[in-house]
Image (tube, rainbow over the protein chains, first blue to last red):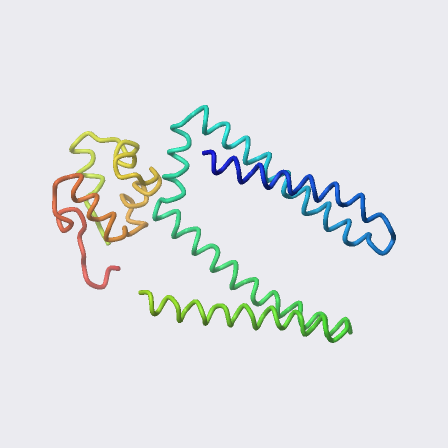
Length: 138
Length: 67
């Protein structure tokens, strides 16, 4: 419980710091960085607030916390979650290749195409590495 | 894989929620098991068998070619 609250507290502090840091980067050249800081800050604060609300509900209703743990650890739910992630990853992999071809069609700089292809290659390398790892483990 | 889970559970007058709580799984998992939509892990099969004080074969019916 305390560990969870500490995590959300740290996330909220980092979020507030990101939003505050945004005001430091006010120049035209720093606009992009400021935008990133607002995005990250808002995301962290939003996540922390929802986390606090969830923890508060669990504190008030301990049976809810137990049920949430059961739901999360349930073997069917775990299988569904992993299957969904794997399928989503597969779809994303091909989407990345579509984006790579789009970058060529749109005559974008070569480094953009190469960066997208590198992501595709990394995804596949990661997949092969994990397959090897799990082959040894199981 | 077919099973007699619903039949055994009802015979003993246990609700799905109670069985799920005792085995620390979700109620939906019990429902899916009973409908035959989901085959349990060997661990859950053992837990079920121990809960009902039966053997796994008494609850789950394995027929070749019907996986």
